[in-house]
Structure formats: C-alpha cells, structure tokens
Length: 221
Image (tube, rainbow, N blue to C red):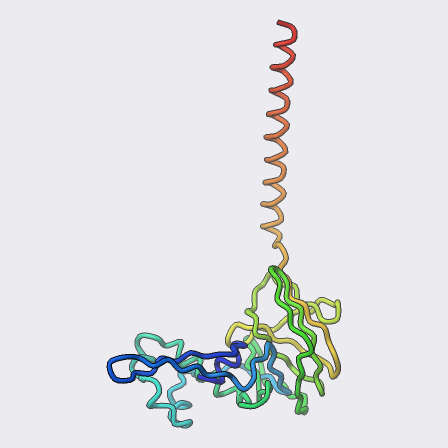
C-alpha cells in the first residue's frame, strides 16, 4: 500500500485503526514523495494481473480480503500486482521496470538510473517539472495519460507512453531536463469554440442592427 501511495506522489497517508470502541487515526509520512519514478526497463503489462499470487508471495494476504478483490473490487488486485511487479524501491524513486500498454516486448537500456527532482510546480492548467537523471532511462510521471495533453521536454513536444496504471511515461537521456505538461484543445473542441464565437458575434451584430433600425425609425418619426 505504501509503495502505491508513493507512486501517486502522496506525502502523508492517514489510517484508521480500530481501537476499542473507537478508531485511532495514524499518520504515516512516506519516505519519499516524487512526481517521477525512473527505470532502465519497460515491459508489457502483466498477463493476469489479479494480484492474488503476488500478495501471497509477499505475505500480504492478511491485509486484504481475497473474496473482496475477486468479487467486489477486482481493480484492487490489479493495482497491487502492478505496484509489486514494478519492483518499486522503498527508499528512492526508482523501479525495476515500468509496465507500458501496447508494448510488444520488453526493452532494456541496461542502465541503473536515479533521479533528483530540482523543482516541481503545479499551476491551474500547467505542470512544470525540472529533474536531473543520472543515466538514460524511462520515466513514469505521477500524472494521468490523456490524449489531448502536450508533453514538452526541454521545449520539444514528445509523445508519451501510457502505463498499465494509465499514467504518462517517457524516455529521458542523462542530465537535467525541464518537463512541461499542459492541455490543448482537440479539433472537435476547437471547432465548437469557433462556432460559439461566430454565434456570439452573429447575435451581437443582429442586436446592434435592430437597435440601429429602431433609432432610425424614432428619428424619422
């Protein structure tokens, strides 16, 4: 669970633990909270991401109810399988592998990268992230993959990969990089916006024209 929270760039986790007739709230602080996880390897998603075998292997069975996972919340098992399968470090924002959707076969750069976040700013419609990676790597960002998103690396637009958890991933060379995420309007939305502007202008022109005609009639009368 803690590794999953680290992947989501969460600093604090609140847990409610039963204590007698009341619940006791515990606050856990993550060892790191990074908007980026790096790895030297990308792989296709797990074939059967149920998470049951992995949880038993890592002795996590008592934590979760298997029947709950199978019947009511199957996504929980998939999420645990993805997190555990990635081999996320407990101390640093690195992973053994990153699962990429629609990837035909594993790709390894034969590197062991690490990353340092220099700055991370989140604005209303823009994210700016400056990082320094030690070696060539694949980076998984803590931001959801979406078709109409511009991903810029050092001012150059790149096409992101979609991870198994529906996040963005990209290739980075060694060194410092500025990563910018910002939305853009699709062709359909641009068309709708243009149509709305034209309709507004048409309405304004019609109103102005009728007003001018009324003023002329009043003046002649």
